[in-house]
Length: 116
Image (cartoon, rainbow, N blue to C red; front, side, top):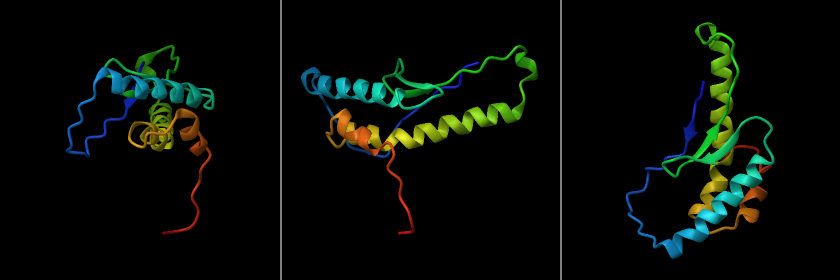
């Protein structure tokens, strides 16, 4: 059973045209960042899917797919959402902020406190 999550940021209305020369360094940094992220998580992993979206992949083994408990699926789904949301800012730093993967991963343990 596979449940895939991917980031699809459609909030912007601007159209960007990148030549291969411009885009290649970004793709390299994204792959570096996903490698750094995957080394820090213990369950599941991030890949670039066939549509070129960062995707969180997670698998569970079940003996009888007809008797999978809802709570198990809910837990797996919640974990995938949590991990995706946790790493989304780092992907944004590389994609839109022009940061290197090593700089973006510094936000891995970044936690905010208080209220704005």
